[in-house]
Length: 102
Image (cartoon, rainbow, N blue to C red; front, top):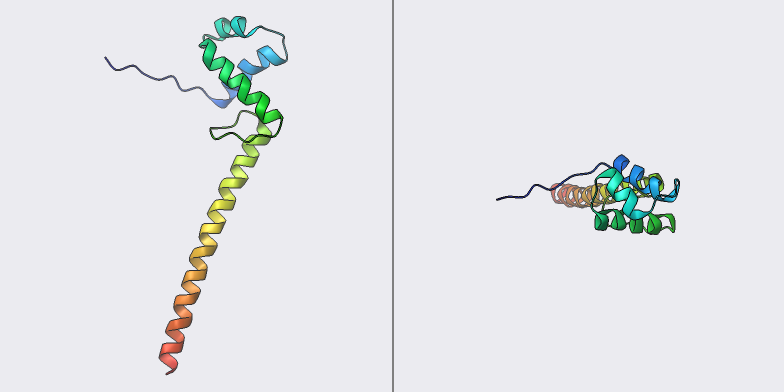
């Protein structure tokens, strides 16, 4: 029997973490209240605390600041790929122009 995997939104993860950080719930209490596994909630809390310290996660970020950083890093990677492509195209056309001049 195939087990389905729950997919949680970033907003839901933020709400779960806020229960612990802002409202003083224990991890076990928040886990039961939000119907999320204890280890899952502990992982989100650890990730949140790392993000607050400036560590950008490999997975989808929880904090808005880290989400923005991830978006900008993705945009930067795309711009670098585009720039590399333009450099290659320029080199190709420069060679072609020199070949037609001869």
